[in-house]
Image 1 (spheres, rainbow, N blue to C red):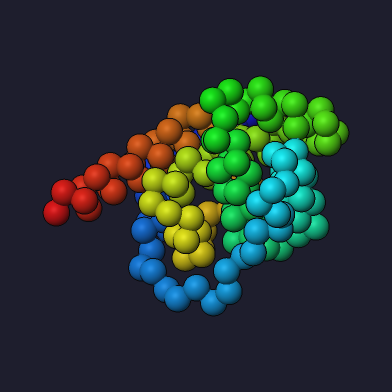
Image 2 (cartoon, one colour; image 1 turned 90 degrees about the horizontal axis):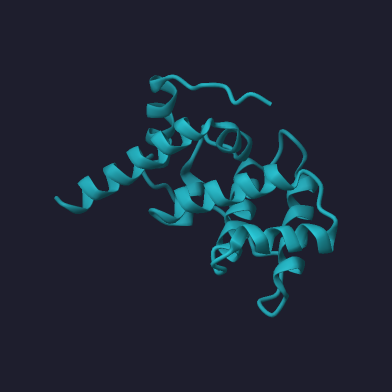
Length: 153
């Protein structure tokens, strides 16, 4: 699958979405697993929630669930290898897409905090996962620069 290139205007729109003025969170998405669950069980429960939402539903929930997968994987130095063992144990399909979505969403929103996800309007898990490497890096770097600029004021 060829990743479609996004224009600079699109990337500016996505950065604006991340820095949208904070509104009140109506209802926080609960974590669907127990703290004591192992990594494979946590990922399995999160992916089941994502798959239940379907293609057009639950944009915020999907972003949050992918964030949680990324957060769990980030606890391991060799998170890619750890993910492979989860995939093997739980027989997860579309493993590359799920991994890419989870790690990109986690890295992007951990720059600020995951609560920012609740304020987004334009970003969704498929869009973030389908960005080319160059476009994702540009989105990440621009977001990081904006945060650094805000913190230096």
